[in-house]
Structure formats: structure tokens, C-alpha cells
Image 1 (cartoon, rainbow, N blue to C red):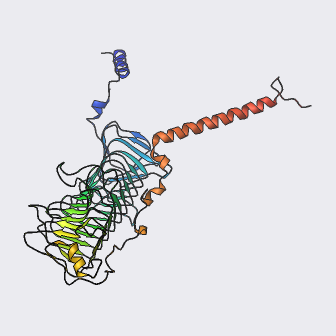
Image 2 (image 1 turned 90 degrees about the horizontal axis):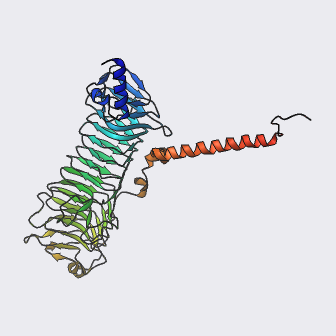
Image 3 (image 1 turned 60 degrees about the horizontal axis):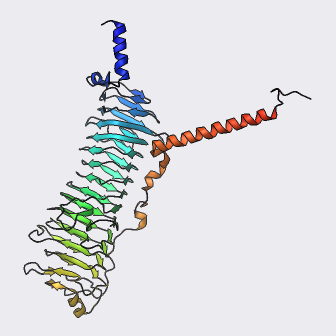
Length: 459
């Protein structure tokens, strides 16, 4: 085929929309061996930043991955600015084990900052993602990534020793490994499945997406500790009024070990809901929480699903619930304030094959033994009891310990207008029209001042 015929063929294929170079480009990978700087880029194939090399992406750059991946074996530095976000679109950015970990002391290593991430990000390394809008998928299969001051609307599954803080989550994330989460807002709750996950100082709303079978009594939860172990402390839990079925503040799975302390767990009052729920749990300590205004304050154990570990409920205020505690198990209650306004219901309702609940040294809202006895149902050892309220039985948490429920404070550095590219385009177009109109009116005004000949003469 001569050159002229080949040219006509390529033109015809291009006009028809056939991807002329795409399939060929997939066979080639670009490897970056030395320090490289990028402005806006449109990838024609995979790119690998080799170990020892640094790829720096300038503020405001638009990186169209076009379905390919950017693999970081070395270092990626993508620092935008509040008014000049970097964009990653349609593909994947992957940090491997050899990628340079972020070092907060030296401010060096892999970082994506002030960016719109409309792609998949995966890591087994330790990059930092901050002040960014994450609308794609984020997977951390290992390593110790740091996420802070982000707005997350896409799916996220994080394990390893990840650190997540001062971020807003619009979808339900999954945390595993030894992840540490703090000072966040969760609009659709959290699921954990790690060996030692900690969640603290956050506003956590019970989500609308069910996580248990349809025949389960509780199908929604602010935190679902699916397996492993978790420490949950200094959080505020909320059940939205439009939740379609029974929900729990904290739902504990089979053989889960948990330390739950210093939380506000209130207003889980719809039928069947509970502040804390768990059937066949492991070792659980519930300490210094406010558990109030719920249908069931605490439910532990179920028919043929008794806990296998030790349960200690100590120094909590369990008040104004329809039932303070219910379940098929024998926890130990110590130094709690346990009372409610509905004395015709049980504060502790319990039958467990003849075994009594150990509930001595608690304050029941009264010092009248007969009144206390009428509140209880089942085998409960409540004597001796306290004659006054336990002072040290409330969470050590205040509103100042939590992020703003509307938006994590770390996000205030991002102008929300910059998050929506279409809105930015509209604003830019409007500004262009205004400037053009102003120039037109100015020119017209100057022309109107001139005589009909178009030339101004001196008198």
C-alpha cells in the first residue's frame, strides 16, 4: 500500500471513530527513570515511575489516564492549590511497596494534595492524600497511607495501618487492619473488619444501606464491627428519622472483641432499634457511655447465640430507654446509672437458663429497694445498690471534641466551587460574557461621543 492510500485509510478510520492507536498503545508501557515534571497529560498507555525517580505534577494540571494506569514504584508529588486543583480522570493510580512513603517531618515522599480524584487509587505503600475530592474508588490493601481533610463520595476500603482524619464520607467505607480513624463525619456509617481498628472523635450517622439478611431484627448500623476487634470512643451516634427499619448505634458481629467507651449513643428509639447490639460476641467492655432515648439501650446475646467471652458494663449512664438492657447473656454491671421514665418496662430484662446477672453497686434512680425490684425482670443480683448517682459515669467528650457535623473543618481550605468542574466552567463563561459586555458598552460609549464623521476635531 502506498503512502497516499495509507493516509486515506487512516483518515477514514479516524472519521469513523475507530481507535487507531489505542489497541497498539496498550502493548507499550512508558517507564520514567529520572525526575520528570508534568503539566496536563493525556495518557496513551500505562506509565510506571521507577524506583528512584520522582514524577512531579504541577498545580492545575489535568491528567487524563484514558483507562490506563499510573504505577508509582518511586515517588509521585502531585501538589495542587486551593484555587488550582490537579485532576486525575478515568483510570488508576497505583502505589506499590517500593513507592516512597510520605514523611511528615521532612515533608517529602508520595503525596496527592488539592486534587480531584475521579479514578481508582490503590496502594500497598504509604502515600498521603489530603485536601482532595475522592469521587472514584480507593483501595489500601496494606501499607500505611495517610488520608486527611478529604471529601469522599466514592467507595473506600482501607486496611493495613492506615490513618484517616478530618474527612467527610458520603458513602459507607470499610476499614480493616489496624486502621486509625478520627475527627471525621460519616453520612452512611462505617464497617470494620480488622484486627485492631480504632474509631474516635467522629459524627457517625446510621446509614440507609442494609448490611444483614432481610430476616435479621436489626439491619442498619452506624458502626458494623463485622469481625476482628475495635476500639470505639469519643463519638457521637445518630439514627436518621427516615431510616426504613430498625438500626443500631454499634452492631457487633460473631466473636468480635470490642472496647466501647466515652460515646454519646442516643435517640435510637424506633421499634426494635438499639444503642448497642451483639449476639455471639467475644470479649466486650462498655464503659462511660451515655446510652439514652433508645428502644433498647443494650442488646447482647440471642437465642442459641450466646456470647463466648466476658462482658463488662461499667460506669455508663443508661437512661430513658424503653428497656435498658435485654439479652441472653450474663454481663457484669458495675457503678452505672441505670434508670428511665418508663417504669412499667424493665430496666434490665433477662432470663439465661437460671444464671443471674451480677448487677451490684449501681444507681437505679432511687434508693427504694421495692421500687428497684419492680423495675427488674429476671434473675438479677442488684444488692447492695448505690444510694446516689455515680458522678464519673458520663463520656469525657464535648462538642469541641468533634468536627463540624456539616463539614470536616479540614475541608474549609477547599473552595467548594472548585470541586465541581461544570460549575467552574459555567462561572468562567459567565465571567467572560460579563467582561465582553462591559468592553462592548465601553467602546459604544466612546463612539457615541464622536461626531458623525468618526473623527473628533478640536474647536
